[in-house]
Image (tube, rainbow, N blue to C red; front, side):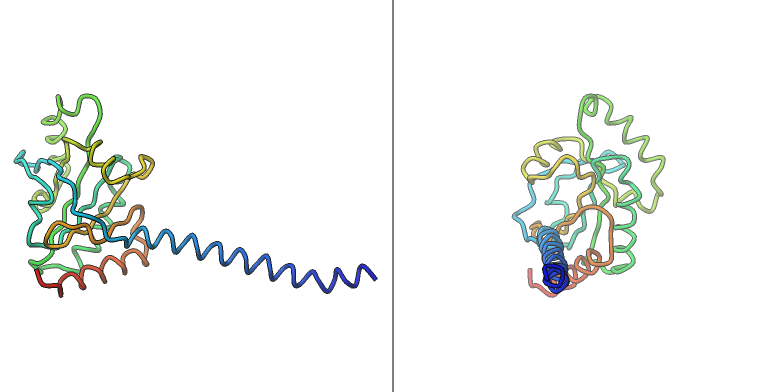
Length: 195
């Protein structure tokens, strides 16, 4: 008799466990997606250098354009950022309303002393046509990261600034389909907003 009761309850128990795990997975995905799309405040000031060693202040430098900032906090993240940039560049090729910058975020001992050497090394590896889309952050990187509340474990950050320098979308990691769709949708929405 107990075996028959267990046999009847077993499928219900299985469905309950399955339904519970599906809800938990959806909640995790929802939290991750809402973090990506969360509109944030004005981007904090960040000093950077072009590969021609000209000083640039962000977000002021991006004023008037919709700007993607692909930030790398680890050398291992270069390929990931290039993939983000390629998708963005392809979607908005020739449209002057959009701009982008790949940004190594240098911090730590010796960066201030050796920044010229570091920039020269990067410059040699970057195609001439892409040099004006490459900014090297050398000052205030730790403070910037802390102000943004970013975890040190995450090696990439993708920010989308509106024409006024407000962060309207952000993400991290690989440019998977859902994230790319959200980025491009947000870009097109920002293009329709008045200044």
